[in-house]
Each structure stands twice: as C-alpha cells, then as structure tokens.
Image 1: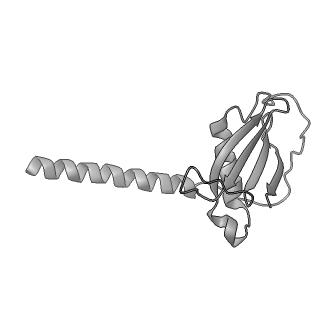
Image 2: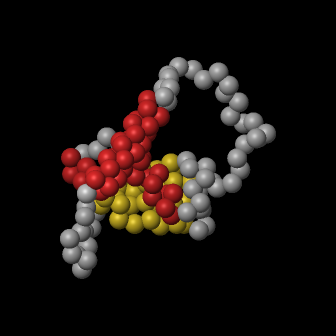
Image 3: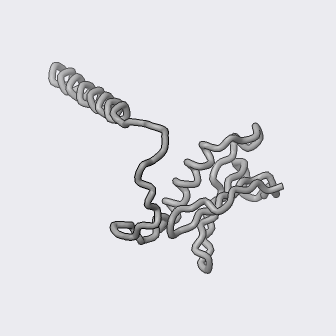
Length: 131
C-alpha cells in the first residue's frame, strides 16, 4: 500500500512539474510589435527552398489555425474540417470546413468555408465561404 502511494505521489510530482515547465516556456516567449529592421525579403542565401506545406496533415493544421483565428459569423463558428484536396497542377491545398454531419448519407450543400494554401511557401491564396 505504501509503495502504491509513493509511486502515485512521485508520478503526480513529475506530471505537475512538466505542466509548470510548459507554462514557463510559453511565458519566456517575447512578443513585440514595431518595424522589423532587416527587411531583405529577396535574399536567397540561407533561404529555405523546399515546400513548406509538404503533406495533407500540415495543410490541415495550418488551415485550422487560420480558421480558428478568423472573425466568423455565428453560423460558421461551429464548422469543423471536412476535407483536404490537393490540386496537383497548381500545387495548392484546399481545406474545406463545414457543419458536422451526423449521418453519412446526408450531404449539406453550401455554407462551408474553404482555405486555399500554396504548397511551396504556405501563402494563403484565398479564403471563401460557399453560398
């Protein structure tokens, strides 16, 4: 009984200290605003040149972050990701959000939100709502 209690206490302390560590790490991030002083955006030396949105999981995560940060109408606040489409010709990811469908045989037309993201650099090309 004492061993179980001791293991539980140790486990709790480790878990608690991990939570504190994560919070402290986030508190250490410095946020600033102003005018950035090194605006050499066209410099190619040291520039990463591979695709930044290389798979559907990354496209989905980026689109969810964008969607969550958007100002939305009340109806669209409950939208969830529905699909990810990759346009092989233009190398564009299109992530579609819509209302949760309770039955797989029912398809709701319109009312969704789409986010198109460029594979090579993550540029958001368009965000649009269906009618």
